[in-house]
Length: 169
Image 1 (tube, rainbow, N blue to C red):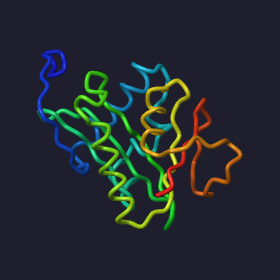
Image 2: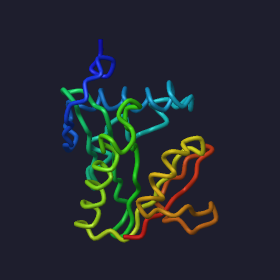
Image 3: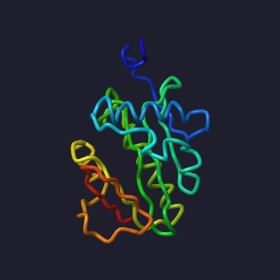
Image 4: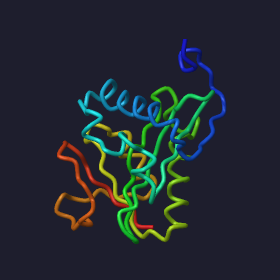
């Protein structure tokens, strides 16, 4: 029985990703993307999941854990001196919502780091189906932008049914 099935509502901790957590991160993210949302992503389509610590070296990647199991993730890809991309923000379904505050704490960690690095903008793309996520991002100051918005050249927009959001810091 997993800690989620047991109904264990313990405190969580947030920490920077360690190399030894990469396989667990990959399985966690793919599980939510594919099992929960049915997006059909392959690991090979997501280079940030193949070598997470290297991919986010110039930005950061954080995980939330309860009892040594990942219950949330968030990554910041720094694409230039002013722009970052929020990637891989996922929280285990049983721990979503304001009651535990995992998503908010992960986001606040990323935002604080982005401000320390003097970033001016954070972009993100998220599946159109993830409507609860959209509400979270809007509550945190993001605005939805159209596909015609001038994105930084380094920003890799997925060829999926996604929405793009922007946060001005």
